[in-house]
Amino acid sequence: MKTIRFLIAALLVATTVSAQNTRDDYQPVVYLLGVQRTTVNDDAMNDAEYCKRNQMAIDRAVLDFVETHRGGFEQPYLPQMIFSSRTNKIAFAVGGNVNMRVGYDFKGVVNNRDFIPADIPIPGNYNTRQKLMMDASTSTIYFKAVANNSTLGRVVAMFEADFRGGSSGYTPRVRLAYVSLYGFTLGRDVTTFCDLNSAPQTIDFEGPISYTFGYSTMIRYSHSFGNHFSMGIAAEMPKVSATYGETMTSLHQRMPDIPMYFQFNWGRRANSHVRVSGVLRNMYYHNLSADKNYSEFGWGVQLSGNVAIGERLNTYINGIYGKGIASYVQDLNGSGLDMVVGVDNPASMKTVPMYGWMAAAKFNITRWWSVSGGYSEVVVDRKEGYWSPSQYKKGQYIFANMFCHITPRFELAVEYLYGTHKNMARNKNSANRIQAMVKYNF
Image (tube, rainbow, N blue to C red; front, side):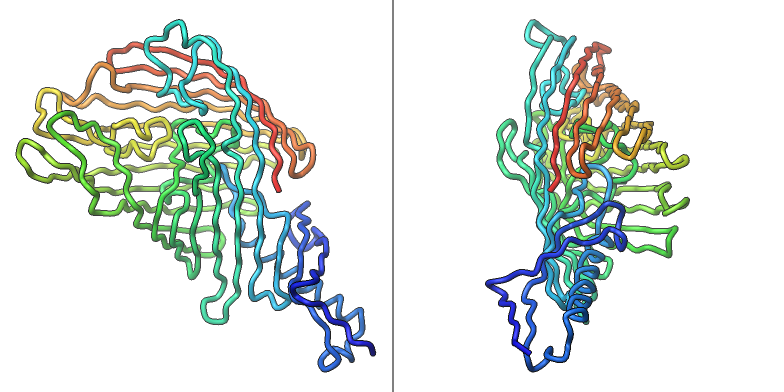
């Protein structure tokens, strides 16, 4: 029998995978690397057996990516191209999306490419009535590897980047860069305080303003107890946004934030859940007058989840309360409200109490059409002696959208957004935005 060789550098075996062994409609192209037949080992193997073994390798490679895929808010699609060794010791994929958004603000504007009510100017002026917005910075690219090791088990390495590193340009920014094994996640990932499946999809990258979506560098451990219970705890690099005034200044932080959660899943395919989350943090600052270092303790609790009602309707909830956790909340991130210096007592700083909530729903008209809508608000409480008239008091966020999948990977969407911003002096302003999106996932 004539010897057949497939050289690693010269030839790849490409096969389109059947969806029957994986998720519905997931049909990636899998390339088997370094496949070869030799007269020593494979002369007795007929073509049918050879193809069967290749198909088994392909199915295992696809299963690696299906079982390690994480869905939820702003999470990438399963990859369209997978490269795998025939032994499935390692598989590698590249994916991402091209995302173009076009929006128009009217009857008030948001001074941001995302719809952030905290950035609605108070008061408005001649230049805050209407605004055109075009943005492609949320386009992403990612690389993912899954290794099956006899000693370490399944190891996942993930890297994802978008183009939001600059304030208005297209500087690359690392979203995700982590290794996961034995339940541990080491590197940069979505903060453990965020419940990725408790908010619906929006064109707006901000999303509901009480949501706790954000990225953090961490050491996390998570574990599932069967199909219903799961938990996680992490040590994350702290980000402190405080208002120091003239008497205080920032310090390098010395303690990690400690977020944690407990989750219960139920329903068909465990597609409903409720999660209780918490975060503990100790934030350091320096008193210039006393030349001493001090710290303030911050904490937060969150209840979140989603409830699937039948096959078409999904509802989402999120409620949060805490002190010194503004950096975790969408509308307050970067606002200087983790800690503030006393107005009447500038020799001390205090954490700022706040609360927020969100309720939303998504209805699938067909497999390819869906509509979503919801309401979210954030409120900052006055702390006696530790607030100023221009300080953020309350934000509101209302959204309604429609998504259409022209193909499983090509999306069109339209969205309406309304937001309000109120300060401590009870002055208020609002803005509207209508926007559309064209997105292709690869």
